[in-house]
Length: 200
Image (tube, rainbow, N blue to C red):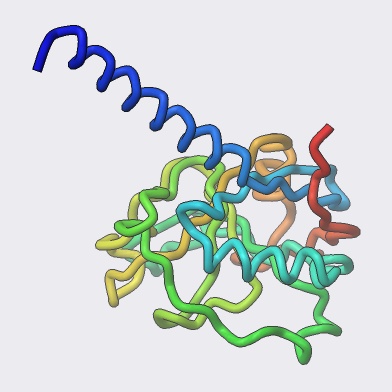
């Protein structure tokens, strides 16, 4: 193959990759949460975590998080009994709508999605694998023990990360520092509204 043809093929490859990246970027969906301590926005990744994002957006679009609450703040000082400590806040839907919740979803593991639990990552809360429903959490600082193979859960399967905070991380940190009894926020921080951000 001539040098000119090699360059042409390489250029086509770069163009194709650029197109794929552009398409992936165009498919991200932002969601804005209005809380009693201020707003924050998350950007979801439906390309790498399609099942988790589709589930999350069903709750957003259905208004389930309106009237919901951020109810948990896991901090180093409140987890003395836990061998593996994490720092996150956890939120859920309006308690009056729990009876309308959708079935649990399959776990999209971080070794498959490539979305690690770094500072600002949004991920689904769960007990066992394939049990995530509507509660989500946001990482305060990097939390590798929540990735696949991490030691936070005995099953080693990790949690389903599906996006990241892109605005209002200061609000997230303020929620993390709000008054709490153990890991339970007291009072919980209310969510007045959650909705998709419409591109301008």
